[in-house]
Length: 154
Image (cartoon, rainbow, N blue to C red; front, side):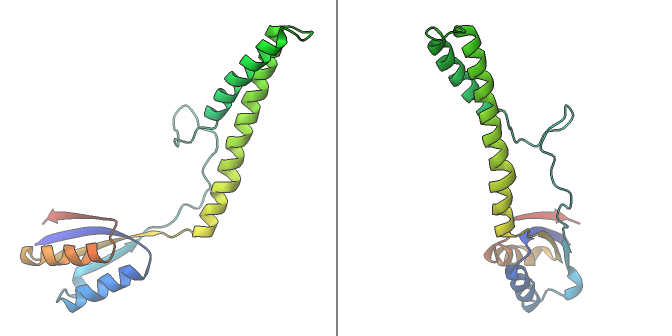
């Protein structure tokens, strides 16, 4: 016996794949679909020392802070407070501007894209079959846009 695990987006392709598996003599008792639930709690924006989500809100701020500090310091030679103060003012201003740009992109634009796409969950489909049926079942799953497939020998 062999078990084939596959993941699908929750769509009509999953239903078509299950229907075609049943037409190819796979019993209903050997097909098991498990829908995954979506995240209910919104992700935290600020990371802690123990976990990180890979989204950096300070990278643009660091780049703009560096650029603005160089411009502020070079203009500071002609201004009253001097290059050090104007360099610091440029660094702080550039960092805040970059942080606000990243924050706006993360909170507003990416959230809007997520709402437009809709939050579709994924489904894990488990098919139990004989060794000689495995290749045919895999081709059916790939044909119906499976995200990934794995075989497990029982």
